[in-house]
Length: 256
DNA sequence: AAACACGCCAACCGCACAGCC
DNA sequence: TGGCTGTGCGGTTGGCGTGTT
Image (cartoon, rainbow, N blue to C red; front, side):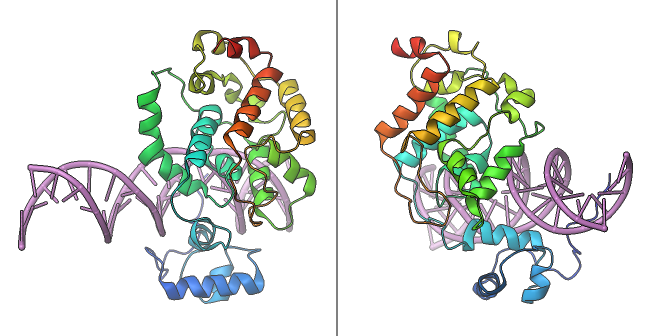
C-alpha cells in the first residue's frame, strides 16, 4: 500500500529547529495540547510537518526531559534492558524517566554498544526487529508519557514496561532468551540460552512486582513527575534476581 | 595553522499498528 | 470489511564539534 507522505512536503521547513520555532511549538502545546500532530503546525503557524513537531517535542522540548550525561546507573540499566529487550528503545526509555528513546538509542550506538561488546563475548543474540508486534509496549510507553495515564497501567509500567502475552509470547520475539542478560551478570550462557519466557512467567512476575514496592528499575508513574532519581544498584539487582527466581532459573544464577 | 578523521546527536525516513469511517 | 489517517517506533543520515596528524 502506497501511503501519502505524512505531510505536504512542499513549502515545509526541514532541518534544525530555531529557538523561535521551539518557542512557538512549546507555547502552542502548553495552550492547546497536542491532540492532533498533523493539524498542530498549521494551528501554531509553523512551517513544519506534524511529524517533525512531534519529534521535536518528544525528544527535546518536553519539560520533563532530563538533559546531560547519563549516569552510570542509567547506562547500566540501558545495557541490561537492551540485553533483555533488544532494540526496543521506547520501552527502555520508559524505564528511564526523562530520557528519550532517541537519546538512549544514540547513547547505545555511540558508547554502550562498544562497551558491551568489548566486555562480552559474541553470543549471536540478535535483537528482534520490529516486525514482531508489540502492542502493550507502545501502550505502556505512551501511558507513561501521557498525563491521562491510567494508574493501573502506570503500575504495570513501573514494574516492567511489558505486559503478559505481549510480543514475547505472541511473536517471533518469543524466542527471546535471557542469554544476554545472564551473560551480563556473569552466568554461563549455555543453559540460559534454552530459557524461554512464557505468558505465565510475565503474569506472575508482573503481579509480584506490582505488589513489591520499589523493586522496579525506576519509580516514576509518569514521565512528568520528578522522580528522576535512579534506583540503587541493590534495587536493580533485586529486580533481576526476582526475575530469574520467578523464571526458575535461580540455580544457574546462584552458581555465580 | 590547516587538513583530515572521528564521534556525537538532532532530525529525517519509512514501516507498522491502531482506530475511525 | 477494507481503506484511510494519525501516531509511534526503530533505523539511518547529515551536520557540527572536537581531536589528531
